[in-house]
Length: 103
Image 1 (tube, rainbow, N blue to C red):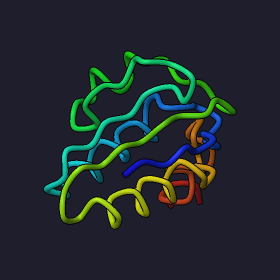
Image 2 (cartoon, helix red, strand yellow):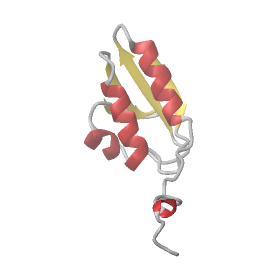
Image 3 (cartoon, helix red, strand yellow):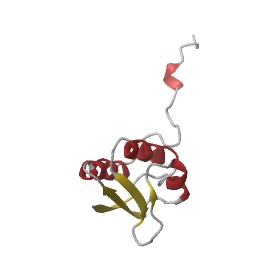
């Protein structure tokens, strides 16, 4: 089974979105691949190096395939990840409220 999904996170399939994508793919027993929707560059979704090597940018469409008993669930979760914007991609707002030294 397969799905074609538009990549919403501004970072595309790089950095944090790619890491979450690979971690999610690794939770399933199905054989999962990802590649450009209009290409034949599909790679294993279990490999961070392979996924980031695709160089998929924000707004591009990818084809996710899953072959196995939990394939439908895998596609559901991976599609949700790619169609949801990632918060704090640039690190804004991180750690400033943890202070308390200024009196």
